[in-house]
Length: 328
Image 1 (cartoon, rainbow, N blue to C red):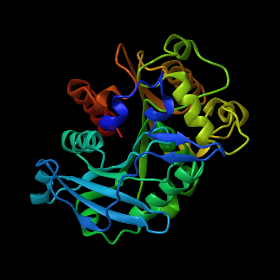
Image 2 (cartoon, rainbow, N blue to C red):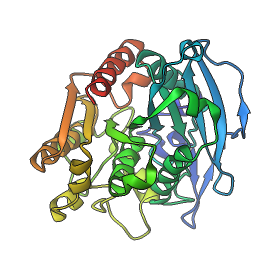
Image 3 (cartoon, one colour):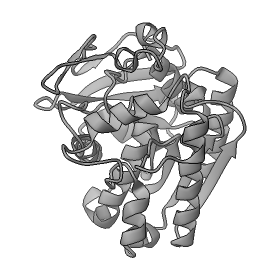
Image 4 (cartoon, one colour):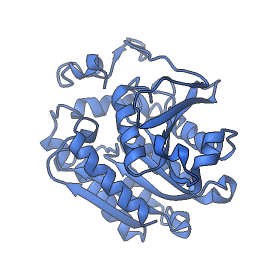
């Protein structure tokens, strides 16, 4: 998502596109490692929001950015809380400080409006899955126990939503499953729903949309295969439940019991220009068949993560998310 990576054709140089160099021993060398700030209020990137960066776990080098619409700073009203997990295929050295993420998060915070906490997590393959899931579950307990006055003053902890893009959507789903059964331990944080945007899932068997868009300019098959090869536990294939959600859904009849008890709703968003669209449609149908409350929004055109780059599509996305949150 950096300018350097965006200029590389993923079908020609998938590793360069991901910002990594493969080594003969199976490890990787990163071509760029973004800096991470600690416990600081940072200069304005957007006059419409106030932002603050805070450490979650200094040992793991994980942190979060709090994004608050400036208009709420002069109000006594609290806003819903959105916990956001960014994309990058678990591999790319993207942080919450990446410029397009700043714009994306600021727009969501202002337009919904909501208090948004954007969470950074450890990359693979240095820390293979489930490390990212662990980090993001930890972030929820960090929010629950936070001494941060901004969150306590302006965020309505009783109206919390988990939102994720691409691999972040995958994370939001798996984190949701983990914490659905321990809701009492998260209070006063109360999750009302999951918002899964262009979620990164896969499987050994290719879908029609993956084959149709095999040489996609944003998420071609060779890139997604590398992401899973570097992200999954060593020795696993793409039918591992972290990758292929349908495997666990079909084998575990009780998988969503706690989700249904909590009354959560799940919003699934994708477009037919995304190689992952067929998986999202199958995923949505299966969740509905299991009795989960699902709202899906599948649009024509677009591409994987297009709302990051298209202001009009981002505006449309915020309206969909806003309407979903309003109904919960």
